[in-house]
Image 1 (cartoon, one colour):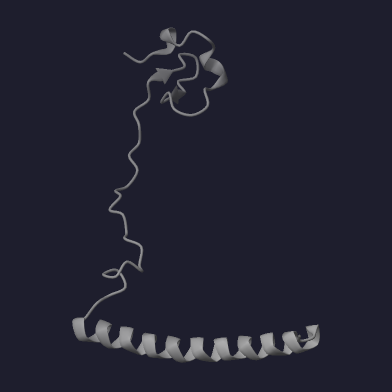
Image 2 (cartoon, one colour):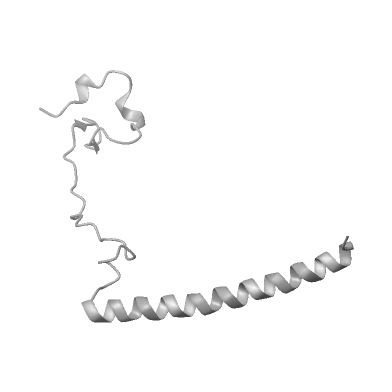
Length: 95
């Protein structure tokens, strides 16, 4: 039966062989992929590597729904409510 040190040496040798084989195959695969990409004129987006850009338009502003009669300050109803709005919002509604 092999000793612990002998097994570690075998493992190190196998790890080295694994990495060498991986690099060789990786180089071959990379070259094949480059040839196919060049042959068909593919882009990164064609093969799903580049994120697609969204066609999002500019943010639109929301019309104010509430107005403070004392200061004329307005609030759209989105986000945190201003202090002047209080509990009853009906009296601040813009008609």
